[in-house]
Amino acid sequence: MSKTYQSINEKIAAGKAVVLTAEEVIAYVDRKGLEAAAKEVDVVTTATFGPMCSSGCFLNFGHSKPKMRITEAWINDVQAYCGIAAVDVYLGATQLRHNDPANMYHPGEFRYGGGHVIEDLVAGKKVQLFALSYGTDDYPRREIRTMVDINDLNQAIMVNPRNCYQNYNVAVNLSDKRIYTYMGILKARMRSMTYCSAGQLSPLLNDPLYQTIGVGTTVWLAGARGVVYSQGTQHASLVERSDNGVPVEGAGTLALSANMKEMQPEFVRGASFRGYGVSLALGVGIPIPILNEEILRRTTVRDADIFATVVDYSEDYPQKTGNTLGRFTYEQLRSGEVDLLGKKVPVTSMSSYNKALRICELLKAEIQSGRFLLSEPSQSLPAAQDMQGLQSVGPLR
Image 1 (cartoon, one colour):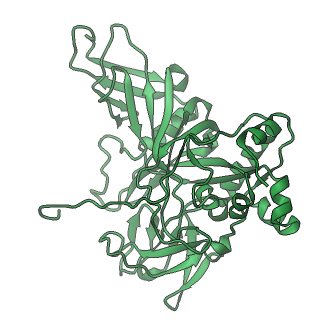
Image 2 (cartoon, helix red, strand yellow; image 1 turned 60 degrees about the vertical axis):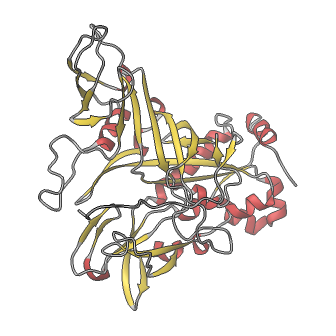
Image 3 (tube, helix red, strand yellow; image 1 turned 180 degrees about the vertical axis):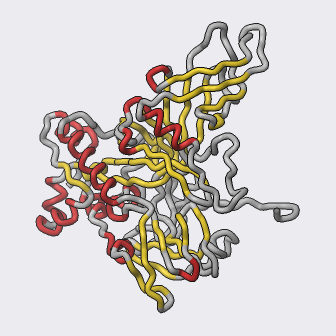
């Protein structure tokens, strides 16, 4: 049995496609059997919601009168990159607000930054643009201060170099003091543990060998129709995997883009991490076409079948020792408590399973209504790629 993207899209357009979420498909295959289910099911929707630091957006403000070539810009006092055309800027999610004390008084609060500006724009709020220039003959203006919202911009395009990590570390702290990380606040002496994944709902855990998700795949990015425009930065497929092909560490990543004017505010949220910095929490949904039995079988992966690796963030992570402390399934992690090194440790999640499931349902509804068609990748994600480290020279500072 095999299907094609074209045949599935024809069923979607006719309103006849059978679409299930990544949670629903597990019980469906248990009940129907793999062979029968593969003939019936056309699409499985996957999703994740959580912090995605390597995110940002290109903004075009249009030309003022007289014209200005922007060389420095701040949006709500958050600096944007201006090393491109006259009125284009790039705003990164983790950029701090101007004069934020950061960790001068540790732990810093990091109340506002790039991710919050992006949230405000998607929510339709007015933001302040302050920009400077050195002035040229054709762009004489040297300064501007004005208020804009997303509808005043010609384009607001989210362009994220790394989203949707395939799997990720589980973080603990073995030291005698509390530490502040991008995995949240970790209590001393392993009195807390955090993880960040939607587990059995997560896109690349349902397509572990990148058989359907690749460059050109259409995605649901915070409610907007988006696309995978490249492998994500730090994509590293040459990692240890379980017998089911699912990695037990980071592995694959996706670079995503979509029109911010089409996004839903619920799924674009600025985030503050005490003692660490700011970020952006995003919702991403990706449909998986059921072209054959093997692809369907991989979408039936359960939390009980997916392992994540525990790392000490007080020493082993910052010093890049490569040491690990153990592994747990997402079923164990989602239980809220695990036993590590003879100690019961409470577990919390940095991502939202409930929001991911809601995205699966929203994407399912769009496909069933014929409003979301699938796209065949123009290029596969690298299946045998390692990640290099940075070789440093000189004193450690």
